Image (cartoon, rainbow, N blue to C red; front, side, top):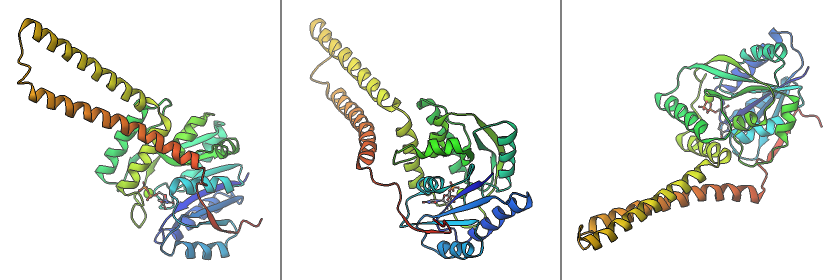
Length: 312
Ligand code: UDP
Ligand code: MG
């Protein structure tokens, strides 16, 4: 059985050698000689590429995809899966936050329970800021309440998937991928494996708040039409409130209560409120139109500048 490991790497010069060492060790220690380590260099601006080329020159297990620029984590994983030849593939971060040793647990669950997907669930997180933990938690709760399918809480992209799932995944053509959501959407038999997420081995997170926000919005707007429904409901409620107010004003005219001329405050409140509702609704529509725009352009998700050790 050939095992592919997909490792997206962006500016990871401080960790990449150690990641390679730990990964290769897992396979040699457990007598699993059939493996390929597919590193995707996602347009790093540091020495990551040179280090990986060095490693690839010495070890034929190591394959390298060089992107022409930074296309993002999800595009890197997509490329790795598409180029993988394995009977199963493991997606793992380069920073050793997902311990490579857990791959063995995943393989065990895969074999004993006949699962098509074995996804890692984080027990607890070391070395991550309170802010990141809180936003991640809130995001998953929100996503689950808004989305049409369910997302396991506390999972990342660290998972093992078999050939059936890899092929099904490779047939998905959306441009902005939210991989953990898509794999969950694919169905098949999915089993959890619990593990402790480590602190980053070295370097710093490549997901600043800006990227996190973009990632979260893809998860939300690509997987749910509920924001659209919500916008419609809010609009509907506002109209209802407006109508009630009109009735009240008319009643006031007839029965002589309420001074219409002195209604400046209420007018301003209504203008501001409805202005807000309209902008919000247009914003929600805009998100979907933006997504459509990305899909319609039909550009490739990534461009591979160079392949190393793929012997084709
Ligand atoms: N990564 C990538 N391209 C990017 C950002 C990140 O390939 O544009 C890789 C990064 O090298 C790492 C993984 O994606 O292997 C997860 O990134 P990171 O550890 O920075 O995210 P965090 O664990 O902080 O959420
Ligand atoms: Mg990380």
